Length: 494
Image 1 (cartoon, rainbow, N blue to C red):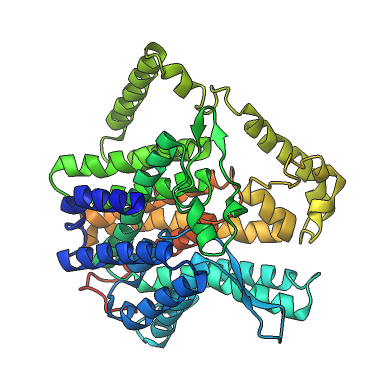
Image 2 (spheres, rainbow, N blue to C red):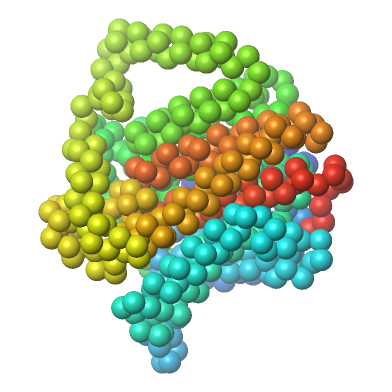
């Protein structure tokens, strides 16, 4: 009931802005979809019954959706990504480890990808140089999975790579073929993030994880995401993403997307309402990485626009004023102690990240080009074992290079750097598509840059990788659109 009340309240408040981004019928349909899937999640009391309901929706209703990425982004965060094994029916131990993200990839993205592949107007694979970087990286990590795994396990890993990486990237990069398509897709992401923000704030205020008990009711492991974790006196919220830093990361990406969406929203107070709500989401995550990432995103976005110096000066003055207020207010010291660079709360997390890089360097050097499969057993990394008995590789780049070496890291980073350069070049030529196209380019390049920064502070857990592969796909779609003459809305991809 709390989740439903929060969701409906946010949708009621945000409706005047959201119906300017998607038509009223689509908004009503998406609102009902969120409510129905939330009801299914909490009332099913069986994960497989919930899976059946989501699959039934995809088979019956999703084909009518003209904007599959909007629906995908909306449903991506409707349920926690708790995992369970699909039984092997006596042939193998299990077929696949299923979670919310892979379920949506199977029932939404796979049919959309097939439809896009069969359509002659779809951008062919390889037309973007980023495609080859992504493909080379996927081939490399797929082959490396066979270093220790048997054939069955290796093939299973290839399937999961396809679901986790290829489908989100492919559909995002091929299904968006007009500014209207971008608007619907990014609105779905922002709409979902706004509802998660309300839930995260309540979790912090009441020290109550709203989705904790539903996992037990579904027969899933409620402790998969680590239980109740605190920063100072405050609970770090999970909402439906299972981790506070991941939630802050999702809210940060939604903020970057909204910098484009606000161009379609009037009056100005509704723009500030949307920005303020998503900033509240980033703040309520109580995670320093997303806080720094959001600030970096804002700076990159502003320096690309008109009157950049004036806007940056105003931003700095606002920050200084906030700093002075925090030093004066009674609760200000509590907030200051949690800030990056100056705060003292959980300093060991910062030290752990620095020590991780130091400990990983000799392991990387021994397996320089292709990494290793047993890097966690290296004595240099064993000193990083935490109290719960795990080594947390809280750095996506370190995780990639340990597993796939410098070759893998080069392909991984190369895809993002290349996409960033192409988006910046496309933005400079986007004026023929209208002012909104220029703002979209600024928003995407700022979001991509912020993502590249934040994943330095977190491993590719939960929604982290799904989100950054879709961000990369959206950037490729934007570059492709800017190369095309101005045209009407795209046909359905679902």
